[in-house]
Length: 191
Length: 296
Image (tube, rainbow over the protein chains, first blue to last red):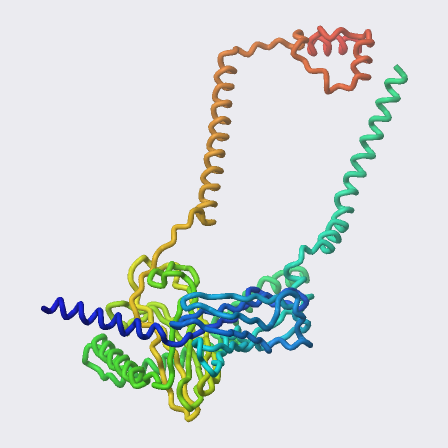
């Protein structure tokens, strides 16, 4: 009898859940930087991932990022506005933009926003903030270069500086060698 | 004299400096600051010990005090409830199965927040901690709270991301993971939502070849090669000695010309030697000398 009750209860909850299956869509949107260092004049990869954790399809999804002002950032690839028609429940989409910062110093990367209709027949769109990477420093290009470039010029200069200490002993040796060989040759000729 | 004085001065000055800075003096400012902090901490300790009073087993009272404090903390935490107007959801984006978290690998999750009420909410922070699964008041690893300070207006939604890394040293066993979301409304009342409060298991990832084992193998190979070389050297020297011992050294003088290497002598000199009629190379040096002396 108890078993039957339990089964009935489980079935009932299942049914309830099935009813809830028609709940609205719920989009979680994250905004992430893929760079370890954000550097002036270097590509900055920003990825937006949108997860639908709700129970129905999200419709007319519009992602808009207004946190990269055009006087401070160039868009190299991609768009700061993206649009999807539908995102099914339990799925996710991602969108990537490649930017190039024109400035250096501290910059607060705040949230973009997403608007969507949580059900097929919703009249009002839902407004959602994405997550924010937060405030971070944009490195000066010269500073970055000093730390991570191959330093060809520096190595070249180093090479030039090592030349005298290598060449002078070689010259001395070579001179004595050639002198000796000349003596040898003379001796042979005299023979 | 002056030189000696200078030498003594140079020897004594560093010693004096060391004594002054290291010993009683403590001349640097940093050391002073540290001292102050230590003193404060010590002072606090003293005060607590005094409060406990003498006589009673200090260890036990300590434990009691700690327990009561923790209980108070828990009560405070319990006092904070989630707001009925806020709806939250947590989604782990990494790893795929959040019930098994690899030790030493990054774990990421997203938190969805919906403001269904009329008041605005300000989402302050998310904190996460690994706790002992049998006793949730025992923290094993506490993660830094991430501060967001995001204003979520009425009927709006927001997403927050947080990532942490379980310590590499964790064994593969169950851990209690708690994740809390702290937020407040514009009127200033605080809320806390326990987003996640479950026992998860940490798994140890067995990477095929990590740097440590790779270099271990390289080192072992190097040792093997070194042993081979050493062995070869040893054997070679051993056999050489044996061979030399068997061959009885016989003084041949300069009579045997076949094993004399003339390469190092310049050709010119050799020719001169051949030409010189004075003495034949057959003569032993002693004979030659006697001959020379007799000539003299």
